[in-house]
Image 1 (cartoon, rainbow, N blue to C red):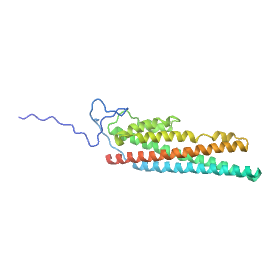
Image 2 (tube, helix red, strand yellow):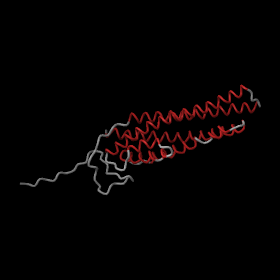
Image 3 (cartoon, rainbow, N blue to C red):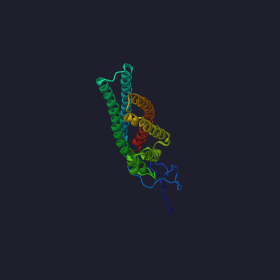
Image 4 (cartoon, rainbow, N blue to C red):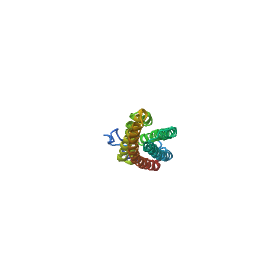
Length: 241
């Protein structure tokens, strides 16, 4: 009788090496022993990209409203006339700045909800491809933690995206531009609220316009990086689903 050959282990297609939280191959050098289903993420990804670009449009509206308010201030200053009509125009212009700012916040919150759901699914998919050191709950919930939402979800997303797209430098660029855009966009708001004279309001408005313009440029880069990252991840996930 001939000896029975030992069974060989054939890893499934697209089975990356076991990944540690630091993105390095585990010491065993073997694939994970169990794999679960990979759920599609394309629909959520398209929704996120759409909402992010809508948010960018609302930021531009906010910039336009600030410039319009400054034009009203200049008209009042040039004609040295602060009557009831001028006060009403100024109040309306200021309300437009506030309204477009609130619209940006609402659209941004919708984007965060979609990002949380999408990040959770991507993390689960990565776990089902053998990645360790991931927390799908933290990947989703991290988006709702003030201040920490600029760090935690991006850490989890980089770990989850590595087996699908490899390099995650574009995600890092997305994070950096997003953080700076969020911080800069908040400057000047308090000065506008505390202004007691037309000159103080005008100075605060110029500061607000400058910060919003810079934030819009940074958010544009963040949206481009997010679009590329989400599209690449969705494309790779669709080949494994």
